Image 1 (cartoon, rainbow, N blue to C red):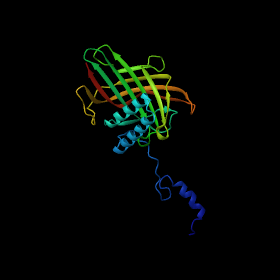
Image 2: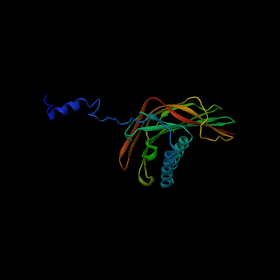
Image 3: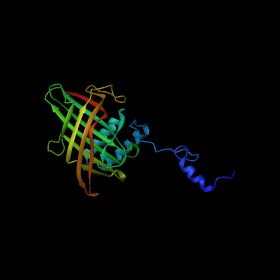
Image 4: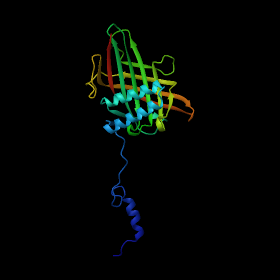
Length: 245
């Protein structure tokens, strides 16, 4: 029997590529994980980046608070969860964490604040999105949810986009329109890497969030920013409870 013509081997190989790729394994790119628990190296890298950002922007209190809150929640043992978000800030996956602060006065009155931060690669931070909220009560029971309109003059909810450049330089876009809704689940186990004090405790909780925020252009680069999560998603968070006189 005659050997097949050499040209006949090419289509045979093409037909079998799904199964064996002509003797070689075919490996698809790995999908990004749904959650990440930061390693010691990633925490150190994120902390170093945060210090560079703060040192390069010493007068920016908003930026400093964002960096400090993000580091606090990630080093307390809270995992970061990948969220399917529609945005033109970055094409990279964004991982979200949250911090819910509850302040109760023993003499009466209380309030809650929420900060949720989405970030890309913690080892090489370049993009962040933050949404935040504030709600108060005349009783000792702090509010467990907030909903509002960005840019309505009340300041109840807000949004921020951040791009990190070289040497700690940043470009900030403050959201001027949109809506934000945040609600807190019940407090869970104590934060694993947190030492409580006489007037402050920390517990793990889950936040339920949806939002749509937009900013006007910033020069440079002269591009507006948008982000939206239209249906409720669950975000891992830490609940810091403060008790004051």
